[in-house]
Length: 251
Image (tube, rainbow, N blue to C red; front, top):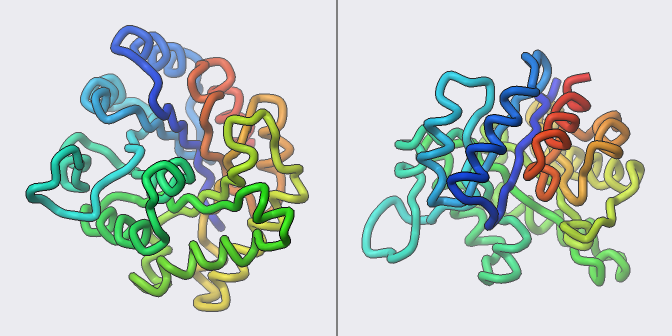
């Protein structure tokens, strides 16, 4: 059975003071969970602070991005080995904001997926379509291309060491959420796509939903058969809402 995850993506939010309050707030309210792994992805400058705060606590550390390169003259970049050195366990690759704002192609994302695996990190492959692509009937084609780029680059077996997060671009930070049936349809499509390459890997693959997930809609979304938790944006910046989402995934 696919494992359940709730991963908070803080994006470019936070400070030492607010991070400390948020982490302590989450830890004080989060009970022991038996069915879901929880992680948070702070901005790069706060990875060490967050790593220290989470030491021997029931929340794992993630990062928001990594370089394709292992080391070298890459000013401003952060390698997978550097992330691992800070006890990072997960790393997002191909988030829609990276694809759109930094022109990251499917091939670049596939290279980052490979770099994460080489550093013994768990890559969270973000895929999703824009509103224009959905309205044109191209959602499945776009997502198939995004997933296939990784399979072609590193082989379907590599997906057994990663996670896929479906985030419809039109729902990220907009307050709009795909209906449970819309989300389930795409999740089932992704699982079926991977199953065409390897039945076992497709069946066990964890596929998260992201896009304005909150305490009110989390349980209904996570109750769908092919949704295995969430990649949480804005709601991960509030302890009460993030804990409620984690509890919904643990049901």
